[in-house]
Length: 459
Image (cartoon, rainbow, N blue to C red; front, top):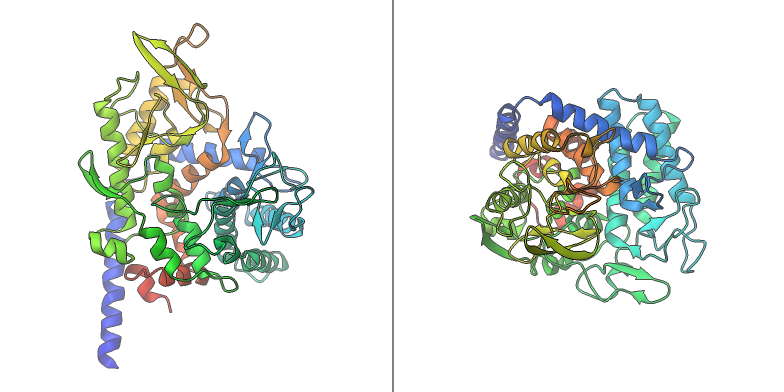
């Protein structure tokens, strides 16, 4: 018994040393990064309707709410408390309004006048009524991101006030209501979506991507957990390759290397797949970030503006679905699209997304922060505005009406969110440390086979 106790103490001591080394190795937060976070944070605080708490998908273009954007907003509010932008009571009021609205929204299998079914929510819902918009699908991943935000609030709001008790209770109820088993539809993994008109989508979530957080939540569910084999089925479709000098899991847009890391600290914890590769998912995301910078440095397709200091592709807005000639080259452009580069796929039309570099700040601050400052300095007010960076820009999209290239006028909630979360994690591990308190997250990770690091201290 004494020997076991000594081993545990030794592991805890080593873990503290690792975390201390990480903290000491971080550069001091650049004042620009602090300003970027504050401006981006204010987007959530100022454009989210206070009556419902349902954050719009985009702004200022009118749009319904994105359930995933709501999940990010629920995480942003406590960060705003820590940054002294709003009070804890204000954050609690916003959070409770949002959770209460979601909990009371109608759930059934009908096509109209409904917000969700089986605990899942439709991808897009009206910001005022909370009802399904655009005949969209019941989204498993977007519901997962929403639940991640709710569970973060469950762990953050830990006081005994009636308001914070209710936050914890509703967050718990929302999570327990999600029927992850139903969403497998008899398959090996979780299906991407469902509509009342056509039933389940034909595809399940596979390959390395943003769905990692969703699978961990599904494994940790106390009411409708998926079998442990679901994680193995998912990782069996991974593509490991050496690309631009970095051996890592392939997924071309950077958001897939960032979303799950917004809530979960993957430093030092590994599943069996990463055990076999000798790294963790945090290091994998660092390598993917380095790939994007190296790709822009080499700029094999000769897009205007790409360099070792201006880079980063993700899922984002784009100028237009069209083709025309620029500087003697025929160029195919896209509107909203996933963009990126990887061994699995490459989609590049010259559009860059500042959130790509900003969401990777914890992984590679030495290249991400200079890239963001270079973007701001190079393009000024066309790119950098009241709420931080607009969603995307394309210097190659040169037309008579856009002689300096195309610059978005919208901000997207699912791109704004990772900026706030990842800057806060880089600053002081705040979101990660709060989520480590949540027993559902720890349970999901352990059922997925993760061991080591901070998980060793979780009973």
